View (cartoon, rainbow, N blue to C red):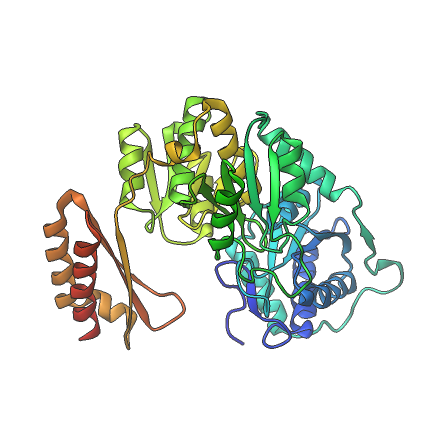
Length: 445
């Protein structure tokens, strides 16, 4: 068996490589590992899912696996991933389980686990769960009254809604927003929360049927939202992905506001409120150089990590910081969340607009994005290619040519035989030319 855990839980084709049998074994192993670490009480797991049809099947398997290992289950039904993380802590549960493949198309699904308090599982516990799955079914299982029980958490959505409104309490009267829920987990809760906060809300992509999640809508398909914001004369648009752990925005003109711009405006808002710890923010190596320039000009230090929300979270916890995020719109506010939360990001964004009474385009303009070119080069050996002397020489030459007006990043893919060549420069033509030049050298190795 290969490694089960990816960068964000287990993910695959539902009923293909991600089968009910695997889900049952995986959930049972997670519960048994919890019991092994603390046999003093009966573990409790919160289980939620997005709107995929396969989630119903996999939820049944996960519940069976948990209860057969002696864990009680609280079902919260269809809610965003960050809601399950929050509720894991709110209910005092030992484990949170989310069935979702985030922004992936409908045929895929996934299983993501949260530890007590709604935090990411430590690597050693993930490894122990994998080993337990590989060991096969247990010889003895709980019987009688020791079998886990299942009940629905009727107040789950209310709890999460109240949490969001308390986390960002500024009223949003006067803000007109169109929200695209990607026909996913945010379809019911996002419009409700934004209206409760005082915004005038119009909605698209909020009719999930189990099949249409992320299908032509949401944060990976911004065209419908851009058109709708302009047509309705709204102040902004908010686009969630399937599990609503992230969001992107659209200003009144229909222009896209990406995660770098959202992170910058939120960092400035927290700094002005005295809530940005150490005047420092966490971003990944893929954040545009324009973001770094904006933060430098504002006197805010940027701590840079590898790509992936797990690395952002690790840096935030290791340095006790309050805000971090990715270009994809995955922002983490550690004062009120343990993982990325697209609804919380949207509330902070709209609150900044309401506070300063300025349009989103003006807030986003603090980041002057440099043109960026990304080229994927297929190679035989990713590590050898990035360390090749000719490649290093080509990169050094490009960096010398750019000076402070751009940058070069070579990044081996974590899953494919690819090297990703990323170049930022003052013009798109210059960026394209340098990326093509470096990519040619990489391809020749």
